[in-house]
Image 1 (spheres, one colour):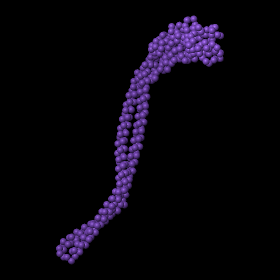
Image 2 (image 1 turned 30 degrees about the vertical axis):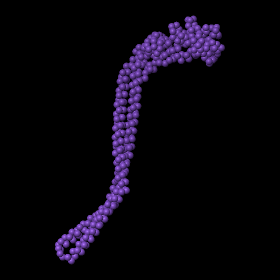
Image 3 (image 1 turned 180 degrees about the vertical axis):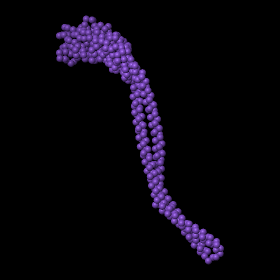
Image 4 (image 1 turned 45 degrees about the vertical axis):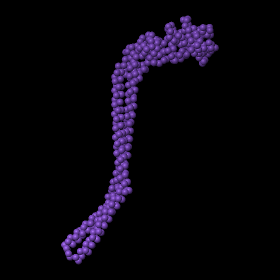
Length: 384
């Protein structure tokens, strides 16, 4: 609906009335127009399907506020409403699934990150411990083993010397002496051989094994740190992707809900009702003669189309041109006589801009409760 009273007033100001030579000598005249005129427009928010005119009151019919003036038929409305509701339901389900996926991903990545962080910390600790302490202890432990073996050989050699010295020149129990000496010699030989192997193992430990172990531990440390960094990046990317999808789905859900709300609100807009009392003019008000009937039942109707206009003729307005020297006589609130019908009007405004004819505009309102005057009718006014 659109109130067009302002445009009517502008038209009246442009082509209103003609002033006689003196306001006291001859009445002023002009054509009256309604103060309140409202166009009834097909105003739909969501429905974009086919529309047909179902009912429409005839021109000139009197209506009260709230009366149905026109009714539309929307054959695709129910289907559009069902689809809109389905869109909302599907969008809600999709949003819920993405929310669950995001929550699961966040919890899963949280656990993976904690595990990767522990691995990285332990690998770093193990490497630092090896470099700063364990390697030295391992080398020293191997050296102690060599020293022990070397001392053992020395002890065995001394023991063998003592036995040889003890048994020298002693022929008693020759066989027993040989057994003891041979056993000592065998033990010493084995100890020396093992000592030689231990020295080789120690050298390999220092030159090869410990270096390889350090390399492996360093690689493990770097690999754990890289896995942690990669997992952090992956979790951010995955969560960002899910968050982006969820944002878009939520935006789509909001749009779907708005589309549904607009469609549901349209259910009450297929009937165009009178916003106030008045007479029905079919179509828009501009150029309407009150008798035209451009629509018939069954016609296709477009969104935004004006189907009817409600004209309140109980209050009319009239604009007249007043000579500048008579301006003070038409101060706002001044009562004027309207024609010969015994009606009165009230000056509502007097212009302060002088036109080319040396005139100013006076606007008069006339109460017309009985409808004696009709829009467009020419009437005269005069000061009492």
